[in-house]
Amino acid sequence: MITKFIKSVRIFFKSLLNLLIYIFNTLKILLSKIFLIFDTKTLLSNHLINYKKSTKITEESVRQVYFRYKIYLLLLLFLTIILLMSVIFSIFFLYKIAIISFIIIMILIIIMILIIFVPSLFIFHSSLLSSSRLLILVISYSLTIVSFALIFYIVQMLSIENIKDVTLVAFKISNYETLEEIKKFNDFFSFLYFSIVTITTLGYGDITPLSIIAKITSSLEVILGISYAVFGVAILSSNKDNDKEIAKHIEKIIANTK
Image (cartoon, rainbow, N blue to C red; front, side, top):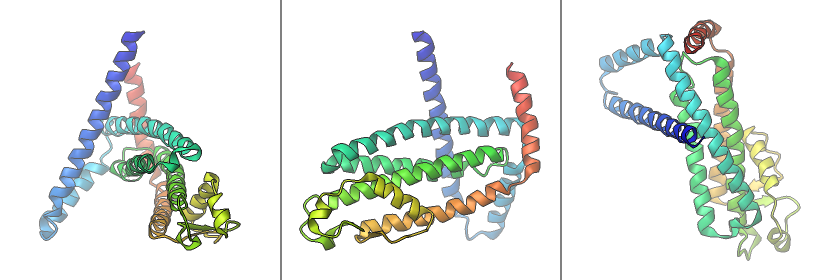
């Protein structure tokens, strides 16, 4: 039993290392190509080569992209647990400690990078089924909502920690107008609601960002919400012929693993 557990842990970390190496190599290639921006012929040639590589669907390309897909889903599961723990700790007692709040925000930044930027490395890969892309998009969308809700909540609670003027609060919330009412505020779910309203660009106006940090984070979530909507439409209307070809390769992979 212990041997199997150690083997599973070893496989997980080896897979994680391979994913990190892939991300590093991708970033290195992207940075190296930045310097070719003024060389039109080279730039167009590289784009053509990369396009042909990315649109060619083979059994190996399907294996590679689903390997990264599996590792990414495992990371999302791990990050979901961390995020939920951060929410619980912040609601009950940790929001009053500035250092812990800072650590939680740093964790949130890492989560945001993983749920926003990492999927772009393979979510548009031609060897990935449309349903798989959509699943990643939905999970990332949901985690983004909770992550921003926690950021808003921490920013608000820190702003009212030693507040002496109602104008210094990070977010103006209806039913919390006076200084005494603001000091009694401790409702994470109000910001979960605000995060949903913000990312969907509804903006009812019952919660209004006042501080610079509150305005910047709210604006960032709006931009992400629009991006999710655009990418979602692109994924749903993706080429179904690719899915049929991918499905054939997946059937071969399943048959070979028996």
